[in-house]
Image (tube, rainbow, N blue to C red; front, side, top):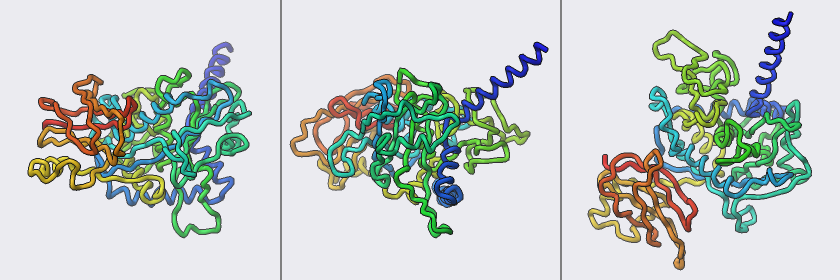
Length: 447
């Protein structure tokens, strides 16, 4: 009898633990909520996904030749000082987003060899908004105190949670056609952490049957639990700052890699192996949809669209990258700006011929470019004001974080970085303005 009671208790605890885990990301529950207020939207989202999928099939790349930049506004909706996260935590979260979406995160070295060939650089950057919808200068962070102690509920009701986007309870969205709105609040329920975040995927297939409008503008964006925002958050949970990477992936049109079903359900990305369910741990040997086929692969626990702890998440696949970029260019066309970096080889050749002087005859976008032909690095600071007295510094690191070169730049729109002779391999650069990071990325030298 005692053994039976113990078995029942263990089963109950397992079910309870599982019910907590599946609420980690509210993507599925949010789709149900949106369907309840706007019948037909789930089918529209499926059609949107498939339309982007058809476009993405011809655009799969390891790296990108264009960079899409998205303006972001963080709405910090707080009841207590603990919920009111510091600017440092917000900017560190933005840095993590940029690293993960450009594959410059230092933990890419942990990607297993079997998955490195399909790992992709999304070529998507996120910057804090500098102007609000009225044109007023801003730092891209809005703080609103609420009378609600928390926005979570048990059982989960995202109709209640979505109140964070209403003026009466939280903070109203900025123009969702121009900004990625990210709300940060307490998503706990009765003091327990379950839901960590959710996002509104793209919609917008033309000529959809019916009269319902799917453009729910005031709900577009991402909602995050305050405990998982920013690096070294004192309240951080296992998924940590990678949760935002996951939810922004949903906002850009990605699905969970297990397809929210068993081994017969897919996320439609051919380079993500099938999985029977979400993974909650970093077990590299797990293969939940084992097949005797010679090309069978284990579960991709490295993928941001799984539920694994942040310490083992470090990649998007090339098809996931193509899907996100297709969704941007088809369904979120007004949310981003694009620049095409001048190819480093072209810049180097023009300089050698004496055609490219300072300032260059061609307009160069803001960015850092390397030439493997001349082993030089070039920095374009964009259009600087005539009286710019800012101090610009560039540092170069190995993938393990060791500083190998540092230089103070002149206040010129375009310049070469001296002292790079002898450096060979892949490096991470960090560009700062008056001590604040304004760009980070990767360069390859000496090949």
